[in-house]
Length: 487
Image (cartoon, rainbow, N blue to C red):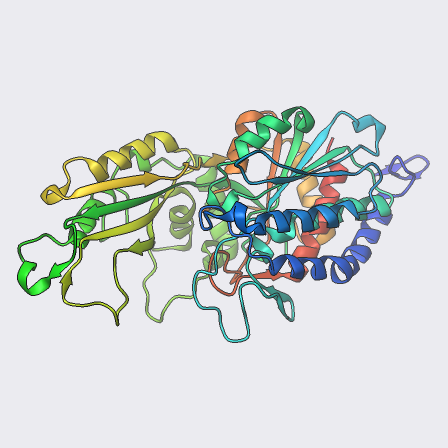
């Protein structure tokens, strides 16, 4: 934008072009010098989410990670920065940071930056040379559990803010919230939001750094998230195991009973969910968005997976697969108990089988109604009179983004062009980020930018997770531009 006196300038007197040039020059160097070594130290901390470590408080690994992030954050050269580790008895902590506005015109406008620092367990054998809690760099990739999901987020958020100020750019008031129960469905988040409500204020913009990208070459904005139900279902048929040659054919197999129960929820042939509470219509605007995405990016739009040769994926086209992965429901059996390993298994009718289920819900599904429907399906009229017990985790609601404001549409493309050289693109995500739906309910007038670095092969939640380093650097530059553009 040209003004009669020359190029437009920030309130500090620096031209936007000069700010953009400074960001592109400084962020990559700062990442190499400061962020990546600190992220490697974080990677070594086994801060498993509480659902995977019931003794998390006694072990102290989450507290160690929180303190590392607090110390690193407090060392940033950002005037007025305040950093706290906020604790509530019996709940996981959050790292909270607050920075005053540098532009007096935006002193009452708040941007909220979000990330989390709890981790999934190793979940499988990592390839030779890699270990889940040892950071290993190979070219553009930094391997280790939590590097991309979502340890990088706090580093990227405050690096963006520090770099913006050093480049002479301006911003409104900014707060950072990094939680440590997200991988468990964020059961502690609402309590912290209640406690921090007066400090958070009323965010005009929320930037979440815990999402995915179809490619690493541009800014990707997530427009919808699926909800999630997680439960453990246990089927008991005996008080103790019995020789299969004696009881087989008489005592019903606990696994067969479990299989019959799962058939009430899922069509085993198609994978479609049977209960109406687990299905939803795709809005026309999202169907159009999916069609454009599939046309431009083809099969990459639906994601890439390390499938075995010859595996037939569900869906007959890229667009249909994107629809299934973002607006369709899905059942996954993510854990099993009561079943010996292959070498330990004997000729025994086992007394019980227990399974952990993860049910992905379309973004507009009511998670409480869905949970009630699944609970009824699993417990009512148990096959053969078996004893069935179900234990639930907190449900995660899905989310469908509101229409973005015109200023944000412009800012997203400008940020992507400045950081990557390509315009931004939109996508739905099949995962859940409970924070987004929680904040969407609390602050319905806020604008949301949900983005992240979980791109092709990054393998969050699986073995060999990695952070794509150039993508993280570029995203940091883009976040700085969004902070500058926020009204």
